[in-house]
Image (tube, rainbow, N blue to C red; front, side):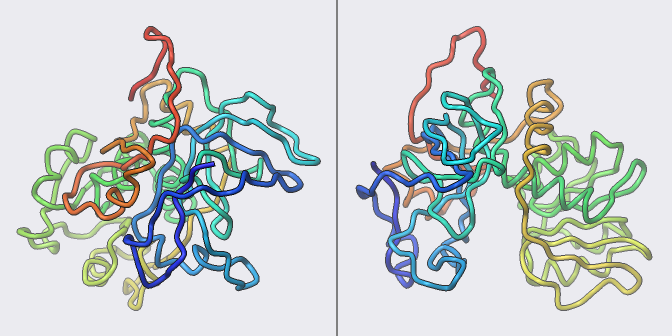
Length: 316
């Protein structure tokens, strides 16, 4: 099968190559998925799990990418809950070969059924961004109606979904980004936009929740904006400072089949719309990782085609 692989940790995105790899093995409780669309995180080439297995042993050549949408083609021993021919989407394991391949092995519990009217390219934009946004806002920060949340990177993959989820529960949303992100952020439902290049972040005032995806100075400055009893949640880096009278939480997203199914239903009913920024073929994955021009939303790699009936195909 064709796959994007990495072998040299020092090569960065220049080490991403399209190669032939063996067809994956379905271990106990696994399924083999024919990948139709895949998502990736630009920084994942710096993650230790991209290069080593859970025991710390080198596992190169490894296949990056951890979001996928596709069709189950094989069940491992003992696998239940999914069937051959079923459309699915979800997350691959951090320390195993990932989704930037024609086929991949995934634990069945990390996948959710994908309704027939959702396009694979839209579904592939949902797992990491959707679960991260939900877990940050509700599992960790306990955001509720009437509170105010500051969402950094509001036009990006995680931020764009977080804005929509926060507005749905009746929270006030302040989004941040660069000047080009203003229109997209406000269109998603944010009431206020802060240009991180031109505006003073302190003008925001106190907020109940901060969702940070940037880290660095932005993370440090944000701790001063959390009102007493509030929460700062970050996925960028463990915070070195904390709000004076609040909490600071760093977390890594976890698979959740039930929540994925819920997010898919929200998408079907129009309550949630993942922002797909660009769709590139598998052969252009290295260029997608290395892209210089910022675009709103999530870049998706289209691995295989599936033609949906024109009247039924969901395009986001």
